Structures are given as C-alpha cells and as structure tokens.
Image (cartoon, rainbow, N blue to C red; front, top):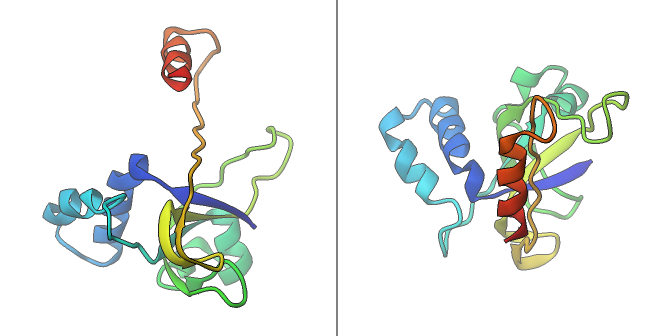
Length: 142
C-alpha cells in the first residue's frame, strides 16, 4: 500500500467530503477546512483510492465509514472518502492502491505525534512548456 498525507492544500476537499459524507450543513465547510494543519488538531481519518476500496471492500461506495490502519498495531482511522485512481508510474502501469493520511497525526507509525516534513505535488498540463508550467516551476523552486 502506498501511503500519502493530506496537507493544507486539500483542506477544502476534506471539508466537502466530511460534510457530504456525514450529512452536515455546507455552511460548516470553511470551519472544517480551517482545522487542517491547525496546531493541536488531529484528524483521525483517511481517504483511499478506488483500487484500494475495491480490493478491501468490493466497491468504492462500501469503503465509506470503514476503518483502516497503517499496520497491525496502529490506531484505526475511519475512511471518509474515496479518491479516483491516479497513475504514478506511467500510463502503462496500473494505478496503485493508495491510502491518504493527514500530514499531522497522533499515534501514527509508532510516534506519539507524527508530522510529515515533506510534501509532493503533482501538476497536470495539456502540454508541456506552457505558461502554467513555467509558473509552477518558479513556485516550486522558491
């Protein structure tokens, strides 16, 4: 299983999935999004790829509300969303089964407080060398 963290850049998506998944009012989305990355807040949730949901529960919709953990002694975390499969090893290779975790969590991988210090970005473009690619390269260098 490929494990990735959810960072502040995914806060709005996290808030939408949480409100829709648990039947909460949409007005709560800005507040829920603001809790991602906030000091002292821990999110004991996970999102999984469609491939992982099919592998573990037969179909993507069945994953919501189920629980997963990073290893046999880890803390259980509730699945709050299913993310479309993303190929990360070329178009000829199958999309990996993936679990997405928050960047800051308690009781993860044997640590009392676990904080991922690195972050990865994936940029998509219709063609290489366009203006958006140049802007993205400048931003990533700084």
